[in-house]
Length: 270
Image (cartoon, rainbow, N blue to C red; front, side, top):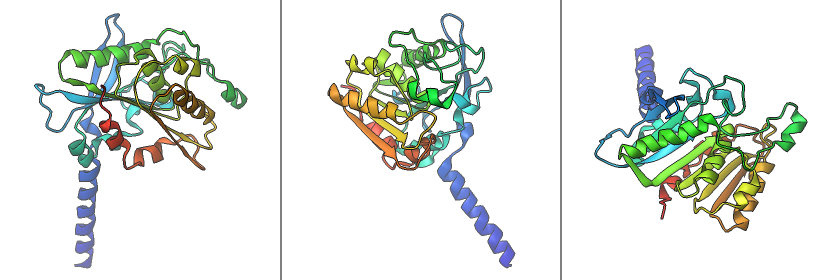
């Protein structure tokens, strides 16, 4: 009898946990073909009560370099449960787009969200180079077209388009806002980096919220620190949170911030 009660309790707890976390399969598998024939795998999470006659906020989520590939799976290794959490879906109904950057061919303009001279040794991580005037990479150009395609469907509230990403995706977040300064209502780069000369020329009004680990030895915190200082110097609305003792995985505490989504959804483009 005690065993049956234990099993029943376990099943109840498991059901409650699943009901809270939601299901990764809620992210539908899709493929987008750009105007020049580029094929971009992506996942999309629609609001639970999605109606194509309504307009919804969009969250564009850019993964890191470790999640590149062609399986249309790895881009959801981190962060998926933040978006599928049933309470979050009820409180913050949105279209969540999660594209996947390919890993091959091994050419920087074809397998990375941003143009970058990538470091080979740990010492070179201090000096990541982001060309100030480099054209948009093929994968990120396709992401922008993907976003445009949803806008063209008439289902997007264009005053509430949000972009966030981690590591390489944080870099892509900066890159998109610099290229399209009046598109996004809010930007949340996590352990990202950017050429601050581009930020100094930034003329948009997108509020930024930056996160980084103080002990990050992959993308050094100095990149977010310098981005924060530059954005403050030009009068941009920006917040910066640095986690003591945290290495590269600063998305873990960032996604646990109780106001991660609520802050984002308070931002409405004027």
